[in-house]
Image (tube, rainbow, N blue to C red; front, side, top):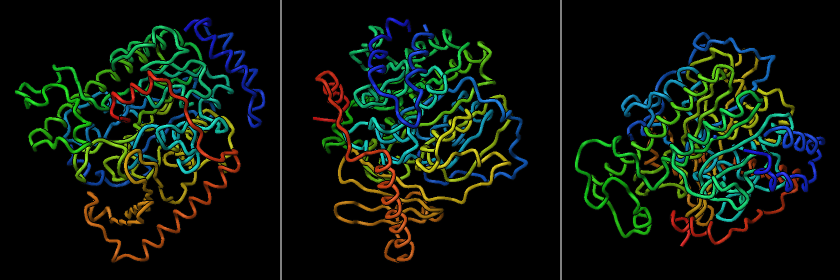
Length: 496
């Protein structure tokens, strides 16, 4: 992007005072702007395999040198069990599989929320939804929250983001710290190129153009694919050569009728809807392959820190529902997480239970950027693979922030998962070793586990209150949405 195209954001950033913990950030911001010209069966079983022995992870990373290039790829609504590196019964996803083989594959990564806004706010801040409060249709990421992009920008990385999702537009304040922030479906302060919708292939084209222009710089680049988010409309060459159900065809757009109860698909239609979703997953995989090939052609693949994950999953009637944002079951919270370290042969599977909120401290640590771990909700993941670090004891994972219906909160501790409804007080408890599908609640027979879970949630709320007071977050901040954004949210079925 040319300097003149960035001018509105540049002027806006100059008008914002630097935050106390990053005192010279304004100077760096000006410097950078002037100097620079993203199978259900697999889910119903726990991830396979035993924890690897230390010998199973090979280490050659130069920990004394921070990576010059940090690439974060978030694939919206991606379930791990539709990737062949997580589920051998899934149709092949060879390019993501390759990244998993050449990096660290986390088999038990969980999201802090079942939909985009709170999940990505946590990824970009290292803070739980209990802290940042960006959990509804209108709340935004608070200005007071320091973001991953701000830390990296102030450390002289060129920060840029390209993606598609209506909840990640600048109105929701996700652009904090990005010198270039270009998100579809539109943004009034973006160049004309970004004022229209774009496809997965189009996003890859834009990302490729950006990488070709900036590969010689130190950068943090976030690419956010919207697919396989509904509506499902994959390239037809990725679909099986069979006649699709007549009401659905080769694209499924009637998701609002399902949520409203006006259409309940037959078993055959359910399977075809999953087939469409799966084809979109493979389309994204093809495009990630294009991106990896380009990084290798540019000579920066080996030296780059590359993280691939998703914000949340998708339900295909495992609990009688469809889509996402409405429950805290694992089909919505279990996500892929692959970390390819720079200049490294550190590979293998990691079976520790982890939270993708840890992406922020993990990247900051890898980039040798100072931060105060006391003011983040989660620790870095580096102890999972670095033999010089003492692994932290297993910590409970907490999720909350539904988009639809009654809000809930959950805590995952080892094999047990507790879910509580916040209005009715309804409680559920599952032993995931015995019941990975979360179908048979044992809340009545396990009062001690229920009490332990409640204690953890109370501690989490107290900790969140402490962090909100530290950052000066009094309540959630509201986004001001123009009519075009509201219309897009209506077309996607988020609002009426």
